[in-house]
Length: 445
Ligand code: GDP
Image 1: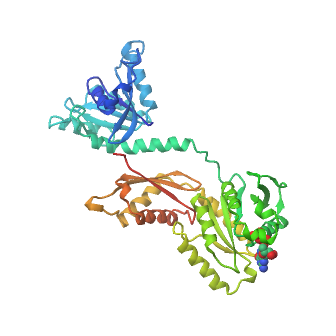
Image 2 (image 1 turned 180 degrees about the horizontal axis):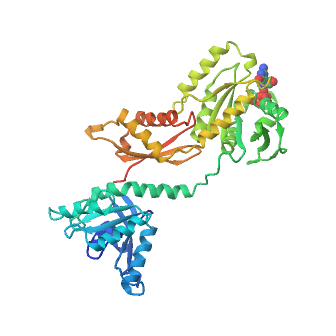
Image 3 (image 1 turned 120 degrees about the vertical axis):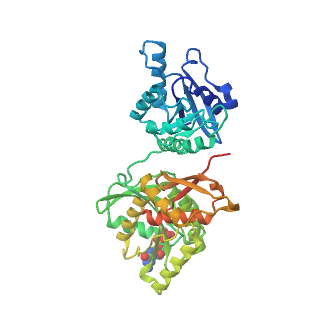
């Protein structure tokens, strides 16, 4: 869980805040002997936002050998470990020298700080809230731990920090290897007779093989390493490619297992179509499966050497793809001939480019500059008169690029609006036609 530390001089209301946040879960409070007075921890829920809260005991300026000095060391350690610090002041008392000292120490650290101007119920705290601006952090939040006032504002202030911490935790688990470092993992799928084995053989006869075939990820597959213009390519060769089965067998095979293996293995999947037959329903199903699994997809129209009325054919395939695969418009379509070798260089080039887009990360700043404009240009609707508030966007993952959108009432965001954002991300931020994922997150109520 993300961690929030409460810090402040004695008697500003830290324990009251702690009890309010931890609420009826008070039984879970960590009351180990000896620790009790220095540091209490508990699981907090604030309007559905969940985090671990640490109540630090003291911030005296005493010698570390003394009890107050040790308490200070504990406080400092808690703040350093926390994802965000709630710095409490007593707005009735105004900003005291000790508050200023704590503020200075906090400003020198890396932990983000939210100033809570406590005891601000009624009017007595107003001048203290204004004084708190001078501490040098973002706008202080007027608050009353005792009366439970200002909880919604505290929620607003905490949300970005809690969510950012949650995403960092997710990311740590994800191995983000340098996408350009390894060989391009490529798979070729398609209906029987599309020309998959002919294509693989063409590649292997013309290119420099690095190693011989190696046992692949499944019993039914092997992988082959070769080199294209100095760049390593690893091709999965599934049973369907290798086994020259009888024609009747081939027609029966739906190649579902091959497609499965190919998707598991590949970064980029090439769906090979037979230009003499055009795009059929089964091709769309395979394409859909590849995109659902978050793999980058390229369409190659094979047997172009014998294509009838090429312009009409190309246009027909393009239209059928855009209509049949609503989630991704503008997939790359290349024309090739496995027979003559036409277009094969371009196919590999396109696969490398697509992998780069699929592995691309944009910074949160770049993303949100784009996001603000996109929302301004086309504000989200207000179902039932209540506006959906979209706060910010962050890229949580790559391969495939995955984004998280934070806001309130996002569960009511229409699918058309989500698509508007996804298409914009693809078009404006250089993701091309790779599948882009967008998750909506709202605080649970
Ligand atoms: P697979 O089932 O997808 O592996 O398809 P194959 O590679 O076995 O090819 C099926 C048939 O199409 C074979 O007769 C190939 O010679 C033929 N073929 C494959 N690629 C081309 C091509 O680019 N042009 C032409 N004219 N025929 C091709």
